[in-house]
Every structure is written in structure tokens, then in C-alpha cells.
Image 1: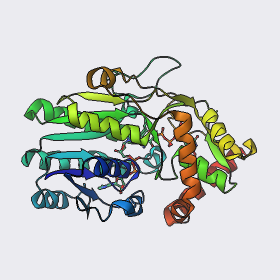
Image 2: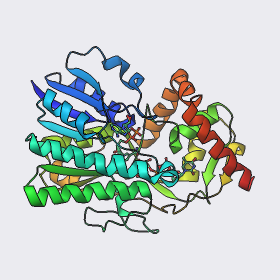
Image 3: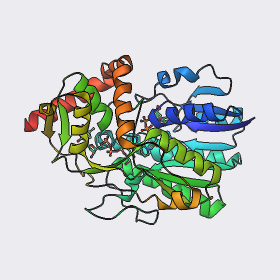
Image 4: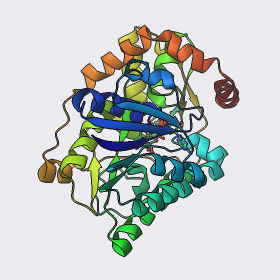
Length: 342
Ligand code: NAD
Ligand code: DAU
């Protein structure tokens, strides 16, 4: 049985990817290596715990000894790196944690992967490395790297090191750059789960700036399918954008969710803008479509409704998170912001 290392598999996208892969490929062993930071939650994979081909190991990619240990214990054919500090607002508050995990952590994984002859390393990167767009145009794989937040810069730094590994050592790496994900198990610090859960609690919904920033959305299972096709057919040394061509202003998205829930728009509160807030993201996904045959399978309106229903049906999951210490801290942050413009 071949073994795949998935790092950061207890988070939002990693857990959805692991569930998808375990169900589809029962002959592959998946080792989930995750530090269980505030964003990592083993409850995201409760239904997979007893699968014979699934193993969880707690460990931190910033700790070289722990990374060396996992590579000495298993022979990995593939490494898929999801582990990251992923929240832009948090990177503004604490950039060092982002440099450590998103850059040094990746360097540790690259070193061990190279020394242990992995066949393929996939770095789950982000469209944020390209910076921000104006009203027109799209990010292609050839767009310049112009990150604007500490989060985006730390992801870009990792992408550059991976490029250097490929050029210098012929290291078998591929980078994927996906747009904004939504779906079940997303931590309620991110816009969509924050709006759904605040609305369900009749709490104010903070919209940054004028609410006209644009994000390009993809259902998390489509992202998992995109990574799957890159794993199967991607060309070593290449970058693949992953997207589903679903652009929306934040304010339109928030109103859509309130409408699904039957909640009033009076919950919306415009608050102080995020510093350095990227205006628009939009992915040109023609390369992965034309070269690898990837097409998104989920329609936005349907998958958004299903996502809303998931949060309605899984109140205990997010109520526990929202009552935790991390989120209490965040609530203070929101209250401060709300106070500024109310
Ligand atoms: P998340 O914050 O929900 O999960 C991150 C996971 O990584 C958590 O389980 C956490 O415990 C783990 N982790 C963090 N630091 C670690 C460390 N030092 N060692 C080991 N594990 C660690 O993030 P997500 O939204 O699932 O994003 C996953 C990946 O996808 C990230 O690399 C992110 O940059 C990328 N990405 C996310 C999106 C999005 O919309 N969420 C879009 C494009 C790319
Ligand atoms: O584009 C991919 C990226 O998408 C990923 O690499 C990141 O890991 C992921 O967090 C996401 O980054 P964003 O900053 O776009 O996501 P976030 O959900 O934080 O914000 C989405 C938009 O909504 C953004 O324009 C900021 C705005 N926003 C966000 C929050 C949390 C608000 O207006 N109010 C809020 O309370």
C-alpha cells in the first residue's frame, strides 16, 4: 500500500480532502500530520477515525525533529501540504507565526521530502500570492507575484523556495493556487461561516470597508478534486490555478446568505477596513481545465445553500469553537471594529 502524507489535515480544506480521498482510494494509506493549532480540529474527521488506511499523528512542521520523525516512521510516496496559518486578519496581528509555519515549516518539509525521495510534493498555495486586481483582468499562472498581506507574503515565500528546489535539485514539486473556498468545517473566522453563524445567533455581521471587495469562490470539494487531478496528471515543476469562476462582492454574498436564512439585512454593520485589503481576486483556470481536464462539479447557489444547512445542522461544532478562548479574543476585535463605525 502506497502512503500519502497530508499535513494540516485537521483543518478545513485538509479534512475535506482526506475524507474525499479515503472514500475514493481505499488502497492508499493517508497519514495526517497536524499540530492541532486553534484551527485544527479532530472532530472534522470523526467519521474517518476508524478507517484502516487512516492514521493521525500530532506534530508541527516548524519542528524539524518532528518532521524527521514522521519521515523515518513512514515511507511517503506523496506529500500534500495544507498546513498553514491561513487567516489574513490574524497575519496582520502576528506575522511571525505566519513566517514560521508558512515558510520555515515548508522548508522543513522540502528538506525531508527530498532526502527521502518522495515522488511528488504538492504545495497548496493561494491566489493571494498574486496580489490584487482592478475591475478587470484575471490571475494567470504567469501573473507577477505581488503579495500584500503577511499571510500572502509567507505563502509566496514558500512558493519561491519550491521553485528553487525544482530548478536546483529537480525536486518533484507542483504548486496549486486556489481561490476562496467555502463548505463544511470552515473555521468561523472566515467570511462565509462567520456570516452564517453570526446570523444564526442574530449577531452583527462586520463588513469591511465599503463591502465592494470581490472574491472568487469555489466549493471545498471542487478544490479537493482539483488537487486530485494535479496529483494524478500534473506536470512536475508547474503551477496550476484552481478556480470555479464565481466572483461576488462581499456585500452581495452577505445579502445572499441572509436571504437564504431569512434574516434581516439590518444585521449588516460596515466596519473599519482591513489594512492593505486586496480589492479583487479572480482566477483564470484555463490551464488546469485545458491541460488536465478539470471542471468544477458544484453550482455556487446550490453548494452555498448546502453549506448554510450544514452550519444549521452542526451547531454544536461551531458553538464549541465560538465559545473558546481564541474566538473570545476575536469577538473583542470585532466589537472594537464595530464600535468604530456604528
Ligand atoms: P485552516 O486554518 O482551516 O487549517 C490549517 C491546518 O493546518 C489546521 O489543522 C492547523 O492545525 C494546521 N497547522 C497550522 N500550523 C501548523 C504547523 N506548524 N504544523 C502542522 N500543522 C499546522 O486552513 P484551510 O483554510 O484549510 O487552508 C489549508 C491550506 O489551503 C492553507 O495552506 C491555505 O493557505 C490554503 N488555501 C486556503 C484557501 C481558503 O479559502 N481557505 C484558499 C486557497 C488556499
Ligand atoms: O483567496 C484565497 C484565500 O482566501 C486563502 O488563501 C486564505 O487562506 C483565506 O482565508 C481567504 O482569504 P480572504 O482574506 O479572502 O478570506 P476572508 O474570509 O478572511 O475574507 C473574505 C473577504 O471578506 C475579504 O474581502 C475580507 C472580507 N471580510 C472578512 C471577514 C472575516 C469582511 O468583510 N468581514 C469579515 O468579518
